Length: 208
Image (cartoon, rainbow, N blue to C red):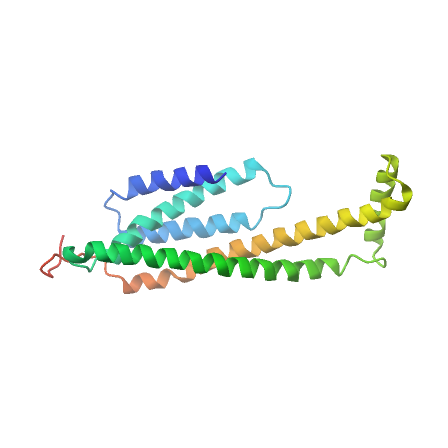
């Protein structure tokens, strides 16, 4: 499913990278699209399938395509031509470092959210909850009917419920992460005010 997103991102960068669209406007459009897609991602469930993922992945790729090229151009805008190569290298290095830190932080937050969500869900999985008892007995009866020894049926039913709770906790955690990604991108938009969209020539004048 990542391939459609990558293709959409590449096509969008190819189209808008050569356009005369204001880079700030392009970044704002891309961020808005990315934030909307993250909001859509936050409504996925464990029953979601390929048809649910396809178009959000396409639009996510388009949003990132609207951001990357204009952001690079803005970052290099005030550099003289003699320093473009070094500036581009430094920009790519910082982007890679930022990505590595973001991945590590995301993995840590995902584990924390999963533990918190699992604890919250597991609080209702107890013998005093009639819904839990009903679900447990139904699973055990189904296993006995399909050939599982009665002595093992309840243990296996508990294992199934435990897996379902874990899956739901992880799904909720990913939803929280998607919302966090979208909110972070939107909150960073004011930083565009500190970036100059006019490039400088090698002599230091303003280019057109």
